[in-house]
Length: 96
Figure 1 (cartoon, helix red, strand yellow):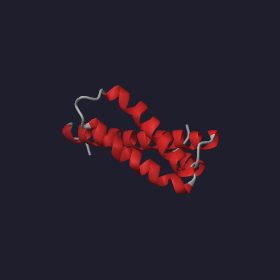
Figure 2 (cartoon, rainbow, N blue to C red):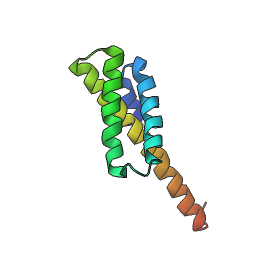
Figure 3 (cartoon, rainbow, N blue to C red):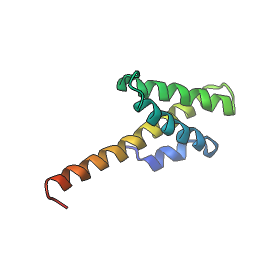
Figure 4 (cartoon, helix red, strand yellow):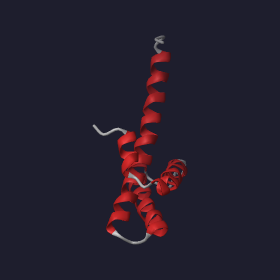
């Protein structure tokens, strides 16, 4: 399994702002009742690709960079969410 660190080495550092923007966009979409949860990952991915291309040009390489930015933002969000849920579950069960 590839770690977030390994993925981040594949992403141009200039595009780290795209990862952050996608994280925020995903959180906003999650709080929007009119948007189905299953569509959020597709919306975030499309936005990431478009933002990356707007910043660095419309090439296949930049498109792939955008795809990675979207993937890292969704993966990072899920790691934190699942960790919080696991801690909460263990705390509720009286485990520490």
